[in-house]
Length: 145
Image (cartoon, rainbow, N blue to C red; front, side):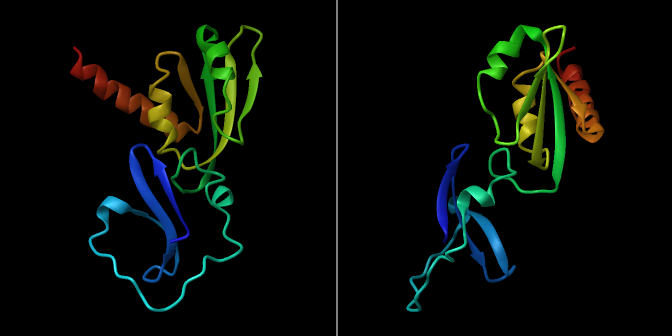
């Protein structure tokens, strides 16, 4: 294991996977067996946890995508007070709305965050995320009819 992290109520270890021959995350609660080995182990000197998660909104990996969100002026001050991600760029429109851009590894982790801001947040880009949110909101609306 290179590191152990705690995220969203879960403990994960990041380390080299001999099966996949790559660095992977392992949920500690899924590990069925541990064995102490006699062979020595050293974490690679070039492994940097911050660099590993650089493009993640939290801990997920994926293809880097530009995410553009518009926040209503009613929440713009609240949203702009915090740095949500190192790639974040914020612009205020002439109407007081906020445009935030992120360069993120996938959209899976930011989607639940977007829902915490509904109805004050609109996905501008990517269109695939916008369509996914639209579909999920439509399904949710049916539950509340």
